[in-house]
Amino acid sequence: MLEVWKKMKVGDICSISTGKKNTQDNIKNGRYPFFVRSDKIERIDTYSYEGEAVLTAGDGVGVGKVVHYINGKFDYHQRVYKMSNFEGVDGKFFYYCFKRFFYNRVKSMSAKNSVDSVRLDMIRDMEILIPISVKEQKKIADILTNIDSLIEYLQKTVEKKEKIFKAITQELLSGKKKIYEWKKIKIGDIGEFSGNGVDKKTKEDEQKIRLLNYMDIMHNNFIYRNISKHFVTASEEKISKCSVKKGDIFLTPSSETRLDIGISSVAMEDIDDLVYSYHIIRFRPKIEMDLLFRAYIFKNQKFLDQASTMCEGGGKRYVCSNKKFESFELEIPVDIREQQDIANKLYTMEKELDMLKDKLKKYKHIKEGMMEELLMGKVRLKYE
Image: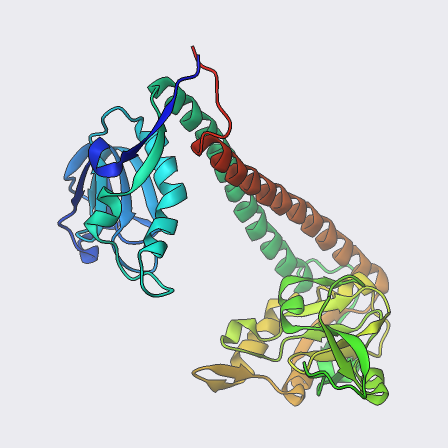
């Protein structure tokens, strides 16, 4: 049987209060959860409430976005709102409704683009659509809880595999398990760095061309023909000088943080209609080197450490010059077979990790769609 849904104000279906604790009251490895103004749940040795509750940050960067559900003993910050003692509403169903719609409400009530704080009335007077039947509420909550559990499992699996991949990458690139001869090289001795890339301007008397950008390097280990849809213009001479050829390695020479200096990506094919931006640099090896291995040679922690410590600047921008990059030292396998073996192992692991990330992204997208359909009553669930 399907019953009607009705709109109700949050203040009519639960009690609302704020805590009495400060962030510094947290105790490492404390007995109980301690909810502060962030996604991270601290610990504490006292509790002020026991039961089912939904909590949200009253101010800070998580305003309208940080929402927690708990059923048990806990304590909470003086600027965290607790909603509890639910009447006629399943607590978990309320949690999903509140999490889905509260931020939009807060944002619509703020005079600025950013939201600084939450007032009591923003919560109390918020209307939510609720099925009259608590059984239907529970069924919706159960479905969303199940997909949340799957997402949490996938998230933890991704994090675990990322740590394993990072550890194996450093182990293989350090030469700890070398098979053939390795040699120490200066990077400038095995290839040529080029900067002075193409800017983002367009001119009528120049040729239209696609631009390989900074963020393309940050987000991709491999550069293929379809990587960029950003069009600019450049002269024929500039296009020739800033070309993208198979095996070229592109790096980030500047960033707001030291740790983002030296992030690299390799071109897996010749791309005639693509040039690199002035925000990145190109390294073109002049020795024989396996194509896949080129994608990983600069993932070596020794290289990244040199990039982060030898860059110059401070405050808003750090920069590493081509000359500095040329002076960095690395140990690399001489035999192409060992390069291929290392690269193939890392590539296989990376592709498996990418598939897992895609799966996680897919289920997050599915959850968003399910919340929209189920919490708005667009799709009704039968129950006994």
